[in-house]
Image (cartoon, rainbow, N blue to C red; front, side, top):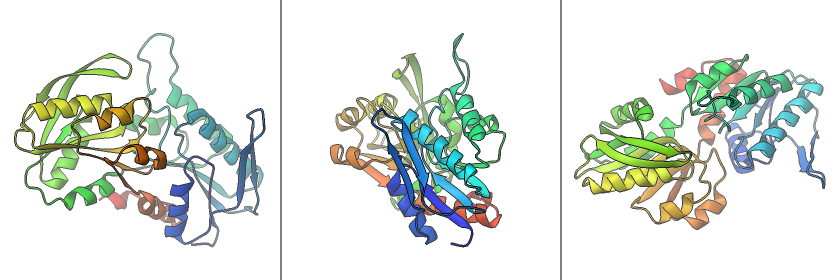
Length: 313
């Protein structure tokens, strides 16, 4: 796979990038990404990339703006170094929740970020579990949208549990939960909630039978963990045997770790789209699965111009 393909990364998730390069069996391209004393970012590609098929692995996770700027500068550097094609591999797409105008005089930030990445010179996007699928349409370049579901499914299939129920924490996630439940032969439930303010929600009711069952709360991301932990408490109160949570992206900001540690959740299963080394030291309930093999296979297929969609059929 080394012929014509190069993989490089900024500072957002070096561990994931190293795992992907190991699966593809090529070394990461030597790249300098550092900052001046005033905070300006300095990027330099230390190898020849002329005519190469480049994949930049850089989630725009915390610190979001810094990691986004690193990505933009990496793209620009590669474009000016005459790379043949530049694919921005963004396992976690920051600003994805700001995908529409919910109030007067607010930006559609995820569209602006898409324009910035395109203007910088990216030729293609490879991302995973967008908060809203329509964000793909914000780009004027091809987007390959991956799903972490196969990785999560492989883990939960090992449970061999005949009493599983998959719970969506809100009505908007029912489609995702239904597809997951179908693959696991599990029943389905969802939480009816009312959000009083940003990052604050109140669980109102559990729709579906969870009594005596092992419940898995499924979401695309866990941010402050308010929704997840309140949903877990409501499910447990309805008689569930045990309650776990699963999500593609472990943002885990603010009081998230404290809330998980103080909750009824027995386990929180997430992927490594966002680096979690420090968080795992604070929370023994976190189980992190790697999406590196999935990303590596997608990168191979994009490079070879074969189907990516068949990964999920």
